[in-house]
Structures are given as structure tokens and as C-alpha cells.
Image 1: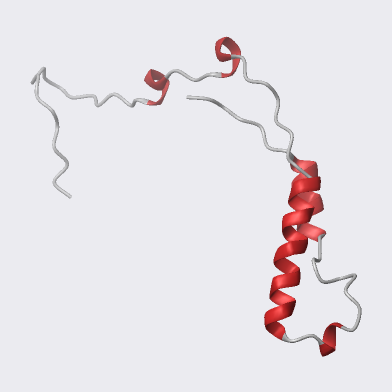
Image 2: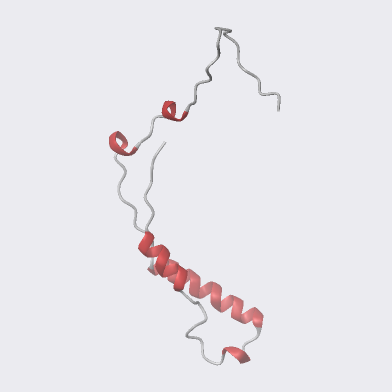
Length: 86
């Protein structure tokens, strides 16, 4: 299991990006065409603003799955799986 970082600068740029902001005469363009222009602009934006992720070092950045397991404490040794009735 890996612990990843996110590219917060890219998330900030994407949050304020308006794909139809620089389109002229937008009020005269049909909605279907506006949606197509917006999709193309988003595609271009994502191609030019690719997120960057740090390289992963398995020795340092990985988690052991055993750390996520929570043992169930019982008062007696039963050697059976505990079934949740809910």
C-alpha cells in the first residue's frame, strides 16, 4: 500500500479555471456548441497542466497492511472468527 501526495498547486489552478472565459460572443453560441467548446478547453487545460507526483520509495513511503488491522480482544481464547450479528 502506498501513501501518495497530491499536487495542490495544480488543484488550485483547476479550481479557478473557467473554460468559456475567453470565448467571444458566448451568448450567441448554442448550448450544445458551448458544451463542446468547454470540453475541448478542459482537455487542452489538462494536457498543458499535468499534475506532478513525487517518486515513490517503497522502503520509506509504503504502509504495512498489518498496521491497519485492528485486533479484537476477547476474555477467553476461542480460536474462531467472530461474526458480527448486525
